[in-house]
Image 1 (tube, rainbow, N blue to C red):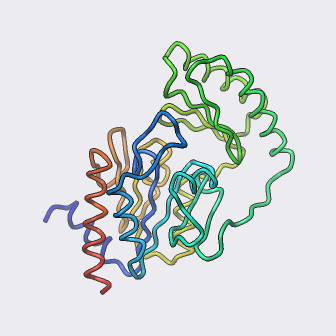
Image 2 (tube, rainbow, N blue to C red):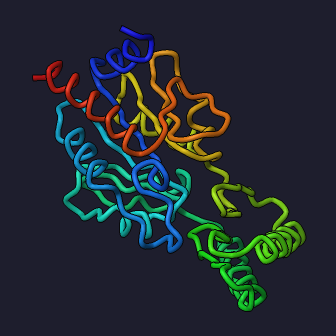
Image 3 (cartoon, rainbow, N blue to C red):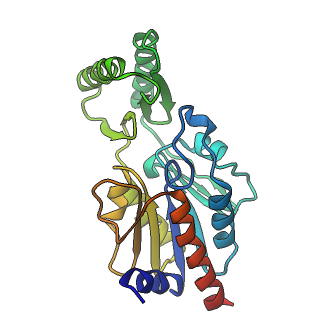
Length: 259
């Protein structure tokens, strides 16, 4: 048995397991139209298989706003899957629904102003898409050429540095994002761990923002990086299909353990 196999088995046989998963690039391929993202059939089957096991909690932890995350995850009110949207600033709880948050009215007003202004100032930039987010905005440049993407990001960087210098700035796969809420995926996983009483956590992601959570995991947890890039993860897999195989192994071992 390899060290990776032993780690997978240890997590799979823990008393109460939290499986916390990024969505884009981890369960769903990265796509040009962000709202068209969907889990691969294999990922969907593996997630659903884990979600029905005893003492096993599955959560999607994403930078997407909660409404967008529910849409792309095809998540309905009967789902047993927890959701942490906006990098953990928003939560959907099985059986209870969306948890309300009290946000500063001035920050919400500034959010609206900046969303409108950024949209107007980038309207003629081909391939640049502005995503309104619950607590800020995202600048997508996947379909823009480099000569357009660079000035678009520079424009928004300058605007936000001037108008909202305290907002948190994040980068990812062809996205620049700003938020007046400062939660990260590390705090999202910590909150989920505490709330469900997890004795171990499996967290997986593919991007820079996922490293917040991966680097925060405890010794008995399992972190998985999907694809390339520097990582604090225990295990790296090449792609979504390879990660699905890990989830299938966890489900198989756990099913034998909890039955």
